[in-house]
Amino acid sequence: MESPKTPNAIRHASPEKTAAILDGAMRVFLEQGYAGTTMDRIAAAAGVSKPTVYSYFHDKEGLFNALMEQMVREKQWAKFPQDFVLSTQESSKVVLRRLANDILDNCMNNSEQITFIRLVIGESGRFPELGRAFVQHVEKPIQEALTHYLASCPNLNLRDPTASARMFMGTLIYLIITHEMLHGQDIVPMERDRLIDHLIYILHLSEKNPDTQQINKCL
Image (tube, rainbow, N blue to C red):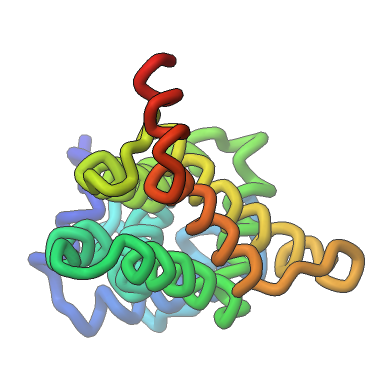
């Protein structure tokens, strides 16, 4: 029996065929959904044979995971941890504002991206491994990098950097879901700059108020 191939195995394959397969797979997944996508349809969309698809990716789940890894690389989400390290000389307000705008731009200016995320959410009820893979590849690295950054900023003096990182990301994700995925921008309007300003204000409350710092130490 053929041994499973991980998404990382594609790095040793032909870049041209890999790109063709991933491009074809993305089109089919977005059109047919996860359940309706077959390796035959992916092969036809990519212009390669079905055995070629299997030689690059062991199965449909592995191919879907590879698409998520590609999405992270292309949207530069994988750069965020390095960006935090390189931003040690910048104001935390500047770094957090840039991060928030980058995350929103990566999602809200790309209809394919929104459709893909909607696909993951919609199919995760029947295929929970898809939702778990999305959290593993996309959400977890950003959450961990942001938590480390918040904990390393002495001026913030946050009681719980992990919870603060969740609050920061959760607020941005909520805006994406209500405004882009659910088309509710006119129902629950909110200017992105206003939202980001308030997020940054909340995270810097202890910096502004010495009494808050004392309260945090007592809790």
